[in-house]
Structure formats: structure tokens, C-alpha cells
Image 1 (cartoon, rainbow, N blue to C red):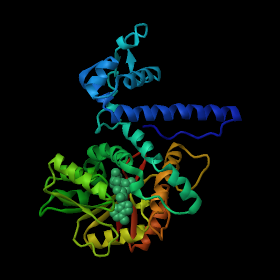
Image 2: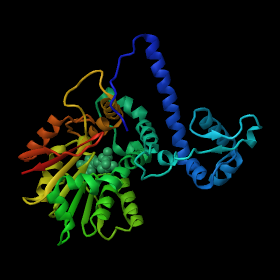
Image 3: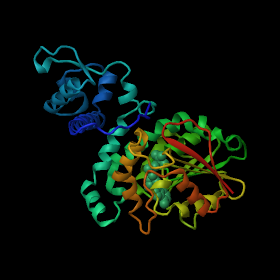
Image 4: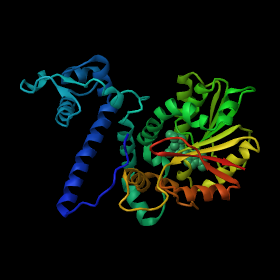
Length: 366
Ligand SMILES: C[S@@+](CC[C@H](N)C(=O)[O-])C[C@H]1O[C@@H](n2cnc3c(N)ncnc32)[C@H](O)[C@@H]1O
């Protein structure tokens, strides 16, 4: 994904209106993709081939009239193709173009974009609460964002865990990679693991390793346990419904990992301190978080726009739900991360040389 583009201020009110009209069409595309994903339309077209509206409705257990409107919308917006437009509506046959399954069907594809649709739907689930939060200064609890946010977040990171975590990210620390491949079996703590795909990827990439995942969100922990069962690694991966900042967290780990969660935490320093304690003198703490610019710049590039968008809709409000809160938000700059690490007692914060569009990789030592 080539995400870095120079942002420009629209040259005139008309240009701004055009940009927002294009954004409206984009939002409609995303929510139509949401329906296609949740209702199984794309998967049915991919697995069983082209269909009329009645056939697709039959395959997916949906209502023909709605299915027909969705199919026509998809063809008009240029995602699906239609064999003939000049026949009665009921006779039109719609197809998923070859290769589009990588974007719309395969959850482990690096090109998958259905999680973006789920994430956006999740972000606006508590919209009224969000408006109130902006007025009152209170937070919006993680649970208020519902299952779409959980699935969207997990769907966004899952392909990266499958293809990169044990192939590139951990090997960027050769000593840790070697330890995870050696005996006695290494132990990994996966903090804020959400639906657990990072823990599962580690267990698959390192066949002897034992993983403990810790997450505050009960629904995520339940789903993560089911995912580990299905993936066949539940004997080596255990998920705990716990605050990772809990002073009573016990155990000794070779690696403590936190992916895309430190910026969401009300008290990131207590969680980093707990991770430091869990790895002791021998282990390593790795934080994977957003690759934002070092300074505020406006207009910003696409990555800054993407991160600020999530920050106002989700990350800052969830980070404010528990008080007192440092109120980090998605845009956690390097200097902020380094300050948190220092306050947690780490002596060194190294940025690892992993090439990635949106993540930065920190190894904390000391
Ligand atoms: C944005 S999600 C990231 C999930 C997962 N690591 C991923 O990359 O897909 C942030 C997660 O951090 C968890 N979290 C936030 N504060 C936490 C805390 N103090 N202890 C444990 N988990 C926490 C949330 O419940 C949520 O599952």
C-alpha cells in the first residue's frame, strides 16, 4: 500500500466540496463492502461463481430484493461486473473479478480491505457517546465500539502477524529469534493481544514456544480463546482476562510484546513497567506502535491523516475511559514513546530496522 501522499489544501470552496463528495462516495463504498462481507456475498460469489440476485440470495440466506439492490450498487460503483445490463433485472448475472478475492475474501491476504470497512463501522457505533465525550471530556469504553471494531482491528493486523511477525519482526532481534527457537521452550507475554492472532502466529512460527496473552476486554479474550482452539495451538497459548498493568502479574518471560495497544492505554507507564518486570534482566520488551511523524505537520501525509482519523474516533476516547488517563491517542510520537519507556525504568529505546508502512518497532532494554 503506497500510503504516503502529500496532502494539499483544496484550492477553493468548490474543490473542498468535490473532495468531500468523493469522500461520501468512498464512505458508501466502504459500508457496501461491510454488507458484502458480513452477509457473505463476496465469499459466495468467489466460491460458487457468478450469480443472479435470486441465486446469491439463496446461497447466503438473504432477501432477494435487498440482494439485487446491493449487486446493482456494486456493479455501478465498479467492484463487481455484470454480464448484461440490457436484460430484466432478475436475469442479470454478477461476478467477482478474478483476483479481487485477495481484497474482499481472504482474511490472511496482505491486500485485504474488508477490515477497513469493519473498523469504520465500529468507529461510528458509539457516535452519540462520542459527541458527548467531546463535550464532557469523559471517555468512551472499548466495549461500546462493539464486535465490528474488534473484528476490524483483528482483521487489519492478522495478515501482518501471519506473514511478518515471526518472519521479519522478531528476527529483527536475532538474539530473541534464536531464543524462541531454542530449548527449554521460551515464554512470550503478549500484552493487549485483542483477538489473539499475534499469539497464534508466534506459536505457529516458533513450534515450542509458550504464549500468555493478557487483555482487559472480556469479549476479545473469549474470541481469542476460540481462535487458538481453531488454529490448533490452544495447548501452548493461554489467554488471560487481565489488566496488563496489574502489579500482581506474575511469571518470567523471554519476550514481552505489545502491538498497537500502548497508545490506547490510560496508564501506559504502568503496563510498560509490568512488562519490564515480567522479562527481568534477561528478557526483551518489544513494542509495535504507529509510525507517525516525529512532529506535528499540517497538512499531513496520508499516514498522519489515517492516524488522526482513528485518534478522534476511537483511540483517544477509549484511552480516556479509565481515569486518570495520560490521553495519548493514536498519534504517539517517538518522543512520547521514549518518555513512557524512560518513566517505566528502561534505560534504552532502540528503533528496529523493520520496513513497514504504518508500524514502528521499539526494543526496550534495561
Ligand atoms: C487496538 S487493540 C490491539 C489488539 C491487537 N494487539 C492487535 O494488534 O490487533 C488494543 C487492545 O489493547 C487492550 N488493552 C488496552 N488497555 C489494556 C490494559 N491495560 N491491559 C491489557 N489490555 C489492554 C484492549 O482491550 C485491546 O484489545
